Amino acid sequence: MNTDEKFEIILNKLDTIDGRLDTIDGRLDTIDGRLDAIDGRLDAMDGRLDVMDGRLDVMDGRLDAMDGRLDVMDGRLDVMDGKISNLEKDMSDVKNDVTSIKLQIENEIVPNIQRVAEGHQDLQRHLAEVVTYRSEYETLVLRVNHLESEVEKIQKKIC
Image 1 (cartoon, rainbow, N blue to C red):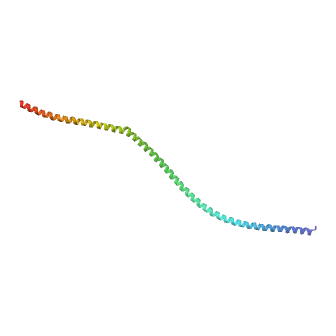
Image 2 (cartoon, rainbow, N blue to C red; image 1 turned 60 degrees about the vertical axis):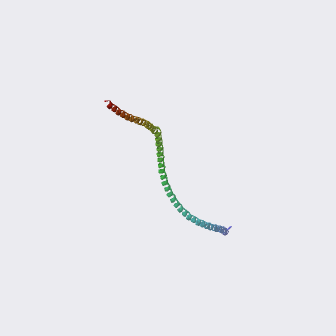
């Protein structure tokens, strides 16, 4: 083989390689087109994600505001719990006081009232007796006065 033939073989191989490279170049152009389409879609998705990110930021702000409100409500509930605990303690104290008062009424005041009532009955009975005796006494005083008068009259007649 001579040089021209070798050169011709090399040229044929180069043409084959060139054809293959053209095919590869076409495929790469197709791939490049697809990648451009994917890039466009990704850009659109990126825009949508940016919108969603903005919406999520707004939602995050709202949730932070709600969290603040819930913290305030939680504080108020804690205060109310404290007040309720104080009320329950006060109610317990009032119940104990009422029980103590009931026991005092039952054990001290009612017996004392009964004693006073019995004393009152005794005084009333004694008063009735005294009134009776007083009436008899006054009757006797009148009789004695009358008798004394009579005795004086008799004495005057005798003298």
